[in-house]
Amino acid sequence: MNNALTLLGLLRRQPSYGYDLKHAYDRYFGSQKPLAFGQVYSTLARMIRDELIRALGEEPGAGPDRKKYEITPAGQDRVQQWLFTPDVPSQTLQSDLFAKTVVALLVDDDADRLLDLQRAEHMGRMRELTRLKHEGDLLQVLMCDHGIFHIEADLRWIELTGARLTQLKKELLSA
Amino acid sequence: MKTTPTIPALLSVRNVHKDFGPTPALRGIDLDVHPGEVLAVMGPSGSGKSTLLHCMAGVMPPDHGTVTYTRPNAPEGSVEISILGEAARSALRLSEFGFVFQYGQLLPELTAVDNVTIPLLLAGTKRREALRKASGLLERLGLAGQGEKLPGELSGGQAQRVAIARAMVAEPAVLFADEPTGSLDSLAAENVLTLLLELVREVGTTVVMITHDPRTAAYADREVIVRDGMIGAGHRVAA
Image (cartoon, rainbow over all chains, first blue to last red; front, side):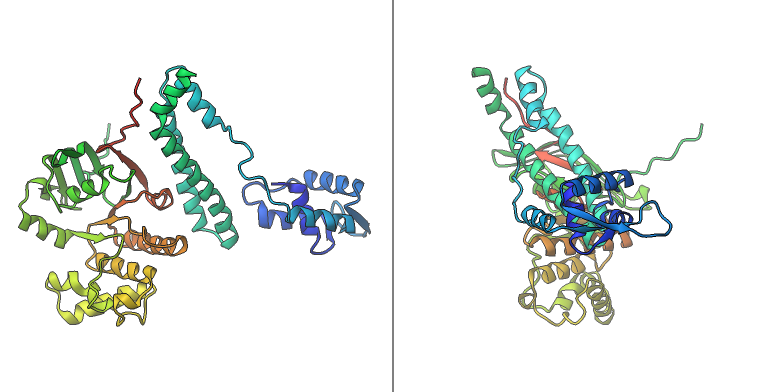
């Protein structure tokens, strides 16, 4: 997830103080890891430098930063471009699990066992996310579902790879 | 030193074998299911998981090995299901177990509420009382006002909730579910599973649920994987 573009996207709704922006981010996206104030202000500074946002001036009052930030037309364009540029699906094909499986077969170790260990780990995480989604609001449901469906895809890969280990080993050793 | 007494397994499967002609379906299964547990039995098609469920539930006897059922709160009342005759197994299934299948298997000519009353009527409950219980459970499962519909007039998710009501109306000690959401779309499956799990936890029913779907299995407390008629067996990697 791109934190800078997400913050910029939130600024498209209305001009905001850094403090309010951080809390809006945490509300929608920060349930796993809230954003640090330092990161918010350093990101805002970079976006000012890149002319994606501008500061509307300092207001008197309490608080660490009373500057309000507004998105610029260039910032609007950048958000638009981000929203409608599809992400690359499965950018990294060679996962660590793939590497472990191949190495285990090459060194004649127990590839099946490592797949089983990984499956148990995946199922544990899936149970955790399934529980979490039933405790939360729809936003949390969607977030958990995203994780659950990705874990499901991994589990399918693990099952299929498990069934192909003999064939894979033969190919690797004959290469 | 004080030791915690061990709670006996509700269902205990030991070295169970089952063949269909020359084809071995189960090849030495050992498995314990504990009271109140929700267990998912996973595995690829043809791995033997349905056969295992049938042996555990007394639908069919194993060729070798034992399946022992220990009634909750009555450890002295253990029953070795695997050696019971057909009539005794049938009586045990009726009094202690509930069943849910992939396609509900409701009786098409009976209304939803009448389908749900069946286990109660078979157990000798008066019809009025059976109808009252069945209607209450249908309402609990979000089917208020649907009781007089025939199964063919219900959506897949609704029909499966009726099947769950029928399986749970007599508050069985064990619910055996074979791909209970296999015929439903993701959202309907999720609703059905959520309701099912709420209900079994409320009643204290133990669940043995067959599924090939990890998302369904994630609702369980733990899962076992059946492959080639064995539990926990890995994919055999030829040298």
